[in-house]
Amino acid sequence: SLCQWNFAPNGVALNQGLFAPEAGIANGPFMLGWVNGVRSLFEFGLINCDSGFGTSEPVSASDVSCSSARSRVQALAAGSLQWRPSSNYTDVKGVLDELELLLVPSGRMNKKNKKLVEAAYDKRSATHDKLSDALQVMTTTSDFQASPVNSHKDGKREEVEKAPYLGRDYKAIVYFYFNGGLDSYNILMPHSKCNGTGSAHVRAQYESVRGAVALDKDEILPIDPGNPDQPCEYMGIHPSLTTVLDNYECGDALFLANIGPLIEPVTKAEYEDGTKQLPFGIFAHNTQTTQVQSGHAGYTHAQGLLGRIVDSISGTVDSAIDEPYRANIYSLAGTVKATDGNYPTSVVSAGSGPVVMTAYDELGEFVSNISRQESTSVMSETFSSLLEQSINSGQTLSDVLDSIDTTVDFSRSDNTNKAFYQAARIIKAHKILESERDVFYISLGGFDTHASLQDVVEAKMDVVNTALEEFIEEMKAQGLWNNVTIVTGSEFGRTMANNGVGTDHGWGGNHWVMSGAINGSRVLGQYPTDLSSESDTEIGRGRMIPTTSWEAIWNALCLWFGVHEDDMDTVLPNLHNFGSEHVFSKDQIFWKD
Image (tube, rainbow, N blue to C red; front, side, top):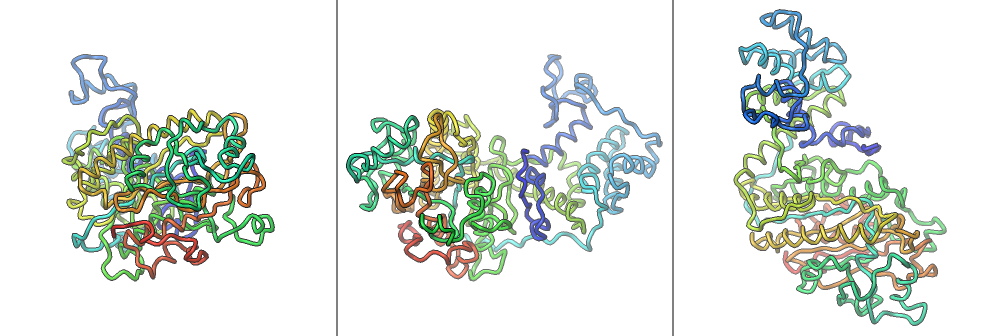
């Protein structure tokens, strides 16, 4: 299935502990893409005009384009809707009753919604226009989209109240997530002058255990870990990550060794004895994605980590912060667990930026009035609230970003680069958008490297390197590199041992943080000092128990971002299980507040 079985959309479904897998695709680009496609279908037929569902524009006739007379465009469509009401077009009630019978599963349309469809039908005079408008508006109702009878509550849906904009110093977090389980033991690895001799030498162990998937010492990029506790005087990073190397050497990047999801610190003996709490489904994609992105290992229904951060600093939930920040949360990768929260997420298309309703000027008032009505039905309310949010955020962002471009000419050759480009535009517009804090989620997939590990990781790290290079250059051009922090993540690391052509699901892995505000040039955490099966962190086939939890770095990130210390146990619910020796303070990571 393309849907995550345990996905719970923000709002009434999540509050009632319900799963709604299909709602995972109910975000701005998809919902408005569908709305726009339906509009084009009603107007022109099956063709690719005005974001239509057809596969090509009407280029077969040289004198016809999407802006030509509608009848000429329709003649070139692959097909068209042929239904016409049996009622006279002047019989509004008769036409709408027929549409209700055809399109509303329950056969009982909400009376307020039906009145708004009627108003849309009456707006234009031509019969085709009237029917097209009515169909467009009716198909955006939850009466059409959901099967239960749609009863409205009294009044409109309560909006999340935004904190006042006070113009304080801007900050942004970019969470760069690698879907599939990054093989990060080929991202950070032993290089030279390592502990041990003979078969106990850490570099020799790396080559022996990794076998065919090990990277040669001569090709990896050596770094000084800046930490005598690491097993080598020189560690190595993947040869494609030259931008990370450059930033590491100038103090703007650091690595996090053997980090992963934990509920509490755990040793190998405690793991084997079952005497400590463990994250559920340790080696499974879905369960680990949920726990890493929620920042709450061991709990199924947690909201997203980024969502809780924004809820806390914006005052959306009860918070100890005296003056909440005006904040926004953006996903450049669709609907994801990480951004779940009470504060609405703006989902932006990496390729095309904010998606808007093409018929907004003509029909936006009707669709908005329908979608903002709160429903008593969980399914109806979920659809309507997500549609309202998609329309509002898309329109607001589009109005601003239409005039915003970057100083750096991003290559935009892949979705990752495009996502960083869109994030850079939003950051550049933060004063116009009146935002003091922004959080961005960007992802790159395809890291489930059971086969072809080296080729896949190399190709993807090339993509990563270019995107980071151009984004950082743009942040410096904007004078905001000290105000933006990039942190990477993935659901798990992979096995040190290879399976012949790749590696399998593991636990602990290695990641990095980048910012002009950090004390970089260090490898923090503890890289395994023994990579053999006798290691006190190895639990089979080179799966490493994390010695650093995700709470460690997010503690510092949250405090830097403005989360109040008294709210940290709410934002990071397992933080209290880790003593100060297991987490990084803000001052350990950042030199600039």
